[in-house]
Image (cartoon, rainbow, N blue to C red):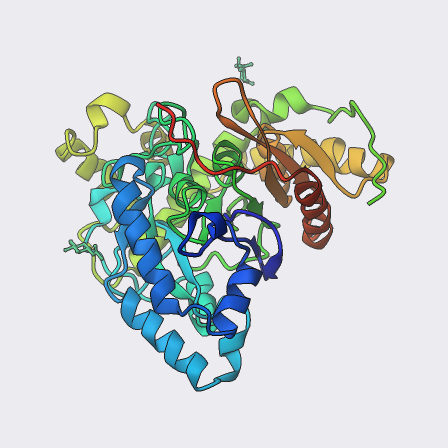
Length: 426
Ligand SMILES: *[C@@H]1O[C@H](CO)[C@@H](O)[C@H](O)[C@H]1NC(C)=O
Ligand SMILES: *[C@@H]1O[C@H](CO)[C@@H](O)[C@H](O)[C@H]1NC(C)=O
């Protein structure tokens, strides 16, 4: 999630803010890079600025779950490397703080819990793939962002942006409005300038929806393009780690859209609960140390600590349904085949018949279509409604079309320049 589009680091296109005066808060990562390279600012100052903003804003917004106790040490190291002109230190995200959704594993002092007390204190075997790449590039891990607990996969009754550990994340534009989820914390934190850039994850709408509601840019790459290793999963076949003289064709229809938007009818629900059980049990088994070893253990923990986890209030019916599955059997195979057919007859056919480069849709309503097909998309700030709640516009395309989508959405962003600073309305 980021504020504007400019610079791309494999999956991400980011923009950022920064600076010590409000006027420069919304500088791009590219501009930040220049400030660092020209010694007009250093990473320690940058980190101290964000820590100050977190201290000031996070008690209300609850976008940040944990701050990395080693963050100043990491900043000083980045500054030393830049002073010594280490080659990697003048490019990309070197010396720039990044916030990670709490599903993204880090083998450091930070916890990785998906917002649940169940995993507090457990030890992951290694950094997630995306984290080791960020560290290799010299990025600074600022901390963990809040989220909808278990990436919204415990219960349909739990509000977006709520987790037992993080409490209720707030929309920085209208505090009473939803921040959407499940990558709520990454979007809230970037929107309110508590960090320049953050990494979320998406199975179905979890980056695009919070990006839309918090007036930031959110990139959902093609499923499989970015490494999901070490990410607390939902469904391996749908999960992804996030970030022109156009010919516009209006009013196109995606065949079977009503079915696709109904997760029961499309097969998405059947397939994801079975895949979730397999994937979460695999993740939990990989932990070096934990009191929780299986989905059954999480369910038991939730039952035992019902008040702590708000079980009584929000339930855990998705967990119970997932636990009742038994692998990828005939029912699940049929559901997966049904999603493939819906994709072939729907999105793929529409793209081919009209020879489209990209599809533009309001908000994030198209996310189930993108989820079942593994398609990439970018949400860009587009408007604010009568109450002042942000609305995004979504550019989506075929697998591997990220470069085109970045180009098109950057063009839209630069031409419209919609994003404004958070208003903190009650
Ligand atoms: C991680 O969780 C433990 C509790 O098990 C806590 O003591 C520690 O402060 C947490 N780490 C951070 C960085 O907040
Ligand atoms: C979704 O599909 C299921 C089964 O195909 C059906 O029973 C249900 O009524 C549908 N829901 C809506 C809101 O249309």
